[in-house]
Length: 188
Image 1 (cartoon, rainbow, N blue to C red):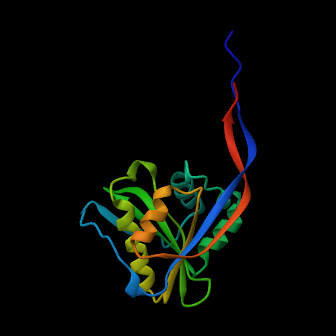
Image 2 (cartoon, rainbow, N blue to C red):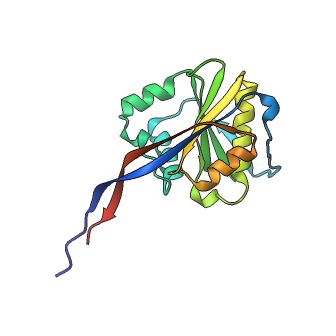
Image 3 (cartoon, helix red, strand yellow):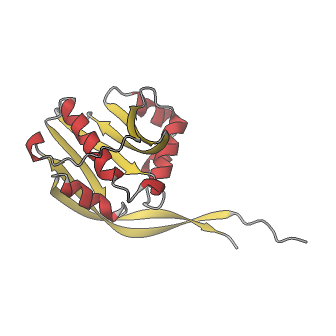
């Protein structure tokens, strides 16, 4: 007789998270790093479907503890994606989705928030992140942003903060708090 199948379980722990808020107060501070790789392209998701967004969010967020949007219902996420202030761009490498950037102009006008940005793990370490991030920042300014801002935390990839600062972003606020983290464990 075979062993009983295992079922995934979830445990909750607490971790101290430091969040750093950064901004480019104006376009003159921007230090882009574009690639001339012809296999990279960016496509705007003009009608982003909830399952597609969840795929992007989960795939980018693997290993860096992105969980906030996973808690949203399909109706909540669909309503958010339909807002005229939410814009989603997908990076493709040789026709395959490689990451996304989500711009949000709902905050203080004429500011644009980079709400989410990231690459799939398979495409990290190739210089695509600095190119795509630069692309997103330039797009925000081209669309009329007076200031572009974002936040990152110690749950994100450590290279994220390095990339943001290299593009000219400067920290303007830091917070620290304890957060509950759900961690999947495989039962034995």
